[in-house]
Image 1 (tube, one colour):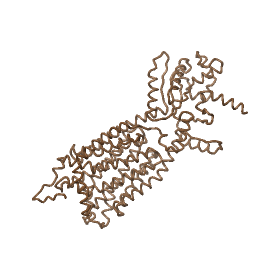
Image 2: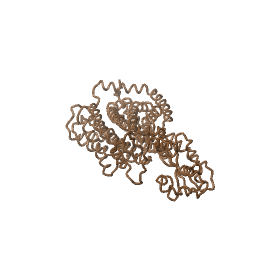
Image 3: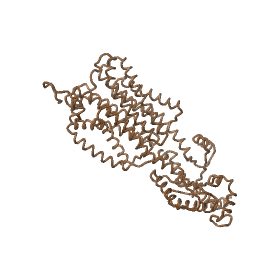
Image 4: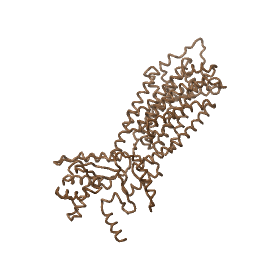
Length: 631
């Protein structure tokens, strides 16, 4: 009967109780499911979706809520793993082929990568550790990082190729390259392990642990298997240093002289960049909503927009009230909290047992108000206590109740402010004779905890990694000043990178919060290799300029190859299906180029300006005019 349907429609739309179930225009309705404790939420979501899709429904069906979001996220993770891992492998092979122009320069670093990935993912599988939105990137990271150690070892073998006996060449190469490669690996491992102590999220801790294990596998393979294989291979045709022609050497000398000539300008420019970057850091926002991790065109985002448009949002907010729910004073306090929530901008349709009792009192002819006696309230509750909605709003002993509402998600900052505003309201309620307590819970509170944890995680993990790396640099340089000089390039990189995030609106999220420690652990490798080689070359040089030119000829080349291989390896994350991994890829790409550039430009400029005594005392002395100036 159309008339009765219209009457029912008018009645339902006039009641606040149904605002969370039916949209204002009566074109959208919700089926709300409450899952039992301990069930596999993702599996339940899959079964629900399968059942619904088996029905012939005349209309569009949306699937919302965290279980459905996690199902979609897991699918994207698997799809990314299938596409990105081979993609980064192809990119890496092309870079190695262009850099070394022979098979051994491609196969050996690639072998190191493949073995470390297989061992790491195999270990995760054996321990039943699932892939997450973060650990999904482990194969890409190991491909980019794992190849770096092999690159330096293969490059060192090429330098020492004039040593005819392969086994002797292996001894000489390892005696010079093993320590810097080992230190580089240890600092990278420290960068990832910093998440174990500094992170609030289990997924980030697991990511830190297993990426560290993967890097350790790469390090061990690079220092054992690759030299063993190289010692058994025949001679390469090309002899001598990596940069062999006179033209190459003149170019390197010219670069060194330019850095020496403009070193003061480089240092002043660096100070200005640090100031500019620091201002940008103050502009960084934070983002913890899983909804914002999906691209706009995905079903998850479409569902969220629909829920926001028709029901005010999809974030459930709950206020737990502890007290005698049958007491009229308690119900009146619950109603006051509801009225407060209704006046908040992003809170929609708050509901509680007080609304139901008020509505029933109206139906009984007592007016739209709460009963004034305990007996009347108890009688009304008795009529509905077997209804499902009653058990969702009131505990069996009637000593606890909840107010439920929906919150519109705008940003992590707004949600945190909302949670704080509600808490401030509770704190402002004066002590009364009645025994009542308020406690907020739900997704907004979880998001606030995550938001706070991101800052805590960032600070703790960065401090841990920074101290560890600084100690490694002091150990390598054997002086405090040397450690300070060595850590300046990567410190500059982190300041610039986070300043970039602030200026370009890239927020701190579960992926970008990893950037500082990851960049510190990986980017310091360049300084370690540069300084280690400088310590070797300075003993055979008459000036800092000559020693730095020799470093550019040898280790400088390996650093450039390393920078491009790692940076371009992470570039594939830009094509990931989830937004945080895209941001992570962009930022690591930026930090690798920055740290490589700072190592090859700022670090020499610092050394040429300061001429530190711990290096200067190793310079060769001029004897009988045999010193040949660079020209």
